Image 1 (cartoon, rainbow, N blue to C red):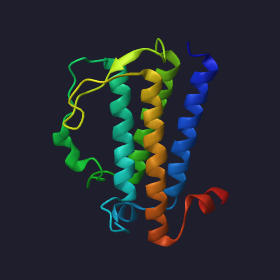
Image 2: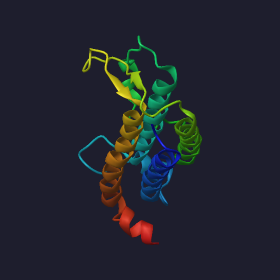
Image 3: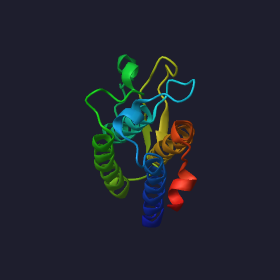
Image 4: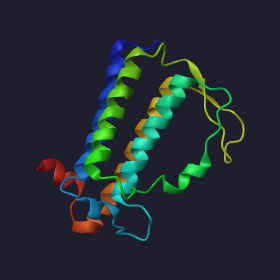
Length: 168
């Protein structure tokens, strides 16, 4: 059974990883957030959009526990795109709301050990069950993984990186 300390550790680690990503965005305007700086299609704004969407998706999976859920892949076209009506400030504010809801969920979910169904998808057609803990750690992995992408994109944009930015 998860202890209160484990739950708070998960919340703190998620917050730390979000902060590292936010540091990479320091001083970036909306135009820069949409700019490709590598051969990849990824942009800082697109990554931010994805992380907000990803965290919201997985916390919804934890709450709903829908044994019939299927991933709607038709929405993936814009998953890594900062839409024309979106702004860095707006996405960050939304992420703050999502993060607060995630922290509340971690604190109040019945158990981190309970097994929940995950949505099926074309690449995972069979239903997989995983613990709430594993699902929260997946969110953490997504943020950490894309923080590395963001750092490379930012460095190619203007030479800044999260290590230098963190120190200032």
